[in-house]
Amino acid sequence: KTLTKQRVESHFDLELRAAVMHDIIDMMPEGVKANKARTILQHLSEAWRCWKANIPWKVPGLPAPVENMILRYVKSKADWWTNAAYYNRERIRRGATVDKTVCKKNLGRLTRLWLKAEQERQHTYLKDGPYVSADEAIA
Image (cartoon, rainbow, N blue to C red; front, side, top):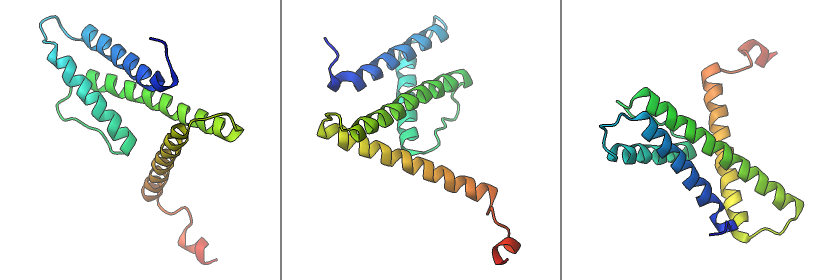
């Protein structure tokens, strides 16, 4: 099938899943069943949902190479997702013809990204403490 606007996101997702499956099969020894691959894909989708919700993702007992592979794919998907959001925002700003659903999705994505950034900022502030000392504040 040809790649329409509607299929771009799912197409990228399918390509990513195929790449993950390929890596999993290359990593696994011969005797391991295929249901392990399905479990890893479930972990991948859960890790992606956690990234979007800004929740730390950790599975106890997951082998380190598998966890690193999942985190690598989540990172690449996150980069693609973020870049797509900013690219669409730029198209909206320029005044290009954009579907209403694209506008709605874009607003949701940018809101989610802003919330992630704000949460990170607040976490950093709590970790590093107030940047103004008490003496500077009253001076």
